[in-house]
Image (cartoon, rainbow, N blue to C red; front, side, top):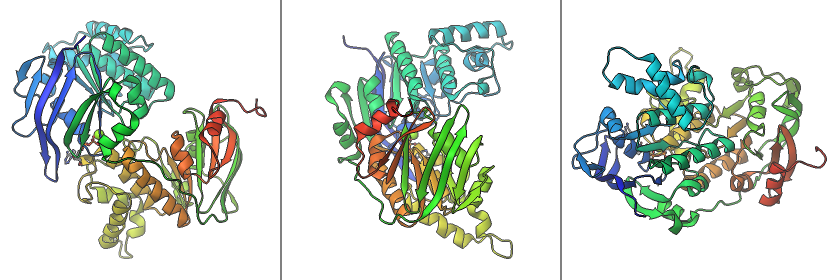
Length: 502
Ligand SMILES: Nc1ncnc2c1ncn2[C@@H]1O[C@H](COP(=O)(O)OP(=O)(O)OP(=O)(O)O)[C@@H](O)[C@H]1O
Ligand SMILES: [Mg+2]
């Protein structure tokens, strides 16, 4: 059955002072379809979404049609009235308000009534939550809920606003596997109710699981719209990137002395009996299913999660790391997984963000900041991590999501750590640029850094690790030499109990 067109936009362009983010885009969304919007970092996906949300005004000449009627102009209120609802990566919810207030406030304010009808609001919220089939009380403060539940609240808010099109910008980046499954179940339910979903993600396997249509943007231009049935990974990637991408195996050249020894590290409910070594020049990959305890272990190394027992030995001396500040003093750096929201001052320039942690080392004896040295250091990392556009004065908030992630990586590298811990290094980075990050990590290791890399992406783990630890349910369930490991054996250790451990 042919579906009706819900949204049709044409000739959408958006010029920022430094870049033409969108150039004559066309985009069609049918009622009730799940539609993937894909493209490399900076391709213009978020900008297009913000135009549909009425947050950005497009350049002259834009044509917007919703359910067959021409719309002159969208602003954040009319966009919602026309049935468009956006779930931004930070959800734009209010952590101090209750779930009910978050869901129903928009509607209550829009009704224009001076009196907020609290009971009515609660009812609206309850109805929206129950429609999702999840168990969330509408009376708790939003901030007390997990990220996954907050996201469900954002979806409930869209339902309460009678959305006909829900756009989700990278909705799965902070979700575990089980939570992603629940989100997909809910998306299929929305689809059955005739609600269209536009989904932005860099995780292509996920897109193939739920999306029936793909629209590809490249460098702000519209490449095309394709049915999922005619697409596969390779085709999509070559449309997005303009070439094929495969990870090259990058082995360590100069693996030296032991810099870190972890002995029987244990924390009840988190991880148990974790022992391993890390050498100079080595990349140690830690993989396993989300929730296996990988992040908790590295947080313990960085002073963010105090272990109950066990030893951490750094350069031969036993250390007690009680805070990230102490960890940094010892030469450690930790790039967290959800780095877009953690760690950047969006209203400051990229340059200032990168040098923030090293300001004290770049202060002259007079007490003044050595701006020359500061600029040089920032420029070096901007080039190394290939931020686009490479404009040091641009505000961090003006970069695309993936480029913000690169800036956070640069900020930590500028501290010149001896031991770098990086959680999901290519999360939010487009497929074409992943190998760039791989080459950078390998070259840092070859220059003497020890690197612990957590990754759920097996091809990445196999391409980059000198040694691989596989965690399962808080324990190390397998250890492999990176050069000879194969994906099947690693997967087995991630999924299946080891005979010895039981
Ligand atoms: N407010 C702004 N001011 C200046 N430039 C901007 C602004 N917002 C976005 N841009 C630029 O527009 C281009 C497109 O960015 P956009 O955020 O739409 O990319 P994206 O496709 O969402 O990428 P990602 O996958 O990295 O999130 C980028 O070059 C970005 O730096
Ligand atoms: Mg984006």
